[in-house]
Length: 207
Figure: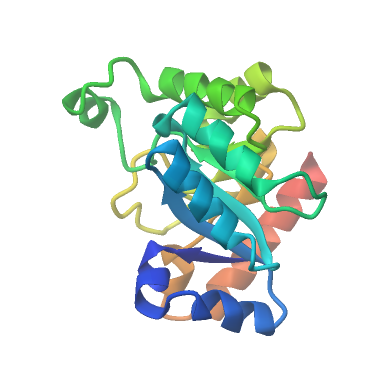
């Protein structure tokens, strides 16, 4: 699955989705909608025209009503995109959260937002590997957990704080991994991608 995030979308627009889907790929539409309920609902409804979109992100901090409106806009068809609530960005630690008025450790806020996302009808969340266990306890085994901040051994953490290796995230119970710069910024992206794939495969067999 290819991720179309804000950087690619602002550069190429909807044709990025059309081009990738035309090549036969499913799409993870990672635009992190965060606005009033009506605006987010219309954004979700507009995205439904792209049949290849399988996952779509919405900021859980937008609140219950916003997420519920997004879920209603997605409809009830079995092949609709799965909606994911973005919890706490992996670039934020406790000090950064405190500066924007959010008290407590990231793990506690992530689980609270995951519960709210599930209550509003979303299919899962985006969260770091550090919170997988607690989310599973709170939301159950069928709730999707998509994990960014994936850094293979030897890779720079860049601007991410709550990171994990691919195998560790899979063993912890992640459903999907988001892997960007470790591959796109590598001297040999193909080789790094293959190594990540081998690590994921080994982790799956060890579960």
